[in-house]
Length: 71
Image (tube, rainbow, N blue to C red; front, side, top):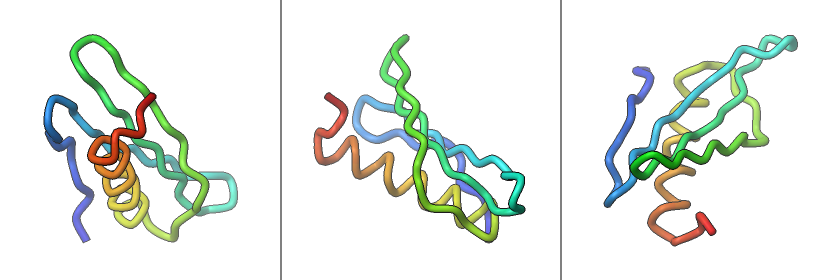
């Protein structure tokens, strides 16, 4: 499974990020950027692989943008 890169969603750039935790699982985060402004969301679920965490983060970031949940 390939780790997704940044995607353009409307006027936003959605970038998934992952981090290996002390427990050996991967945490997912997503950056949602528009121009000079960037918001980073840390997501709760943990994953067995970086690719799964990144796919989840990208899906959540797209959901935030498409459903106007950035306020």
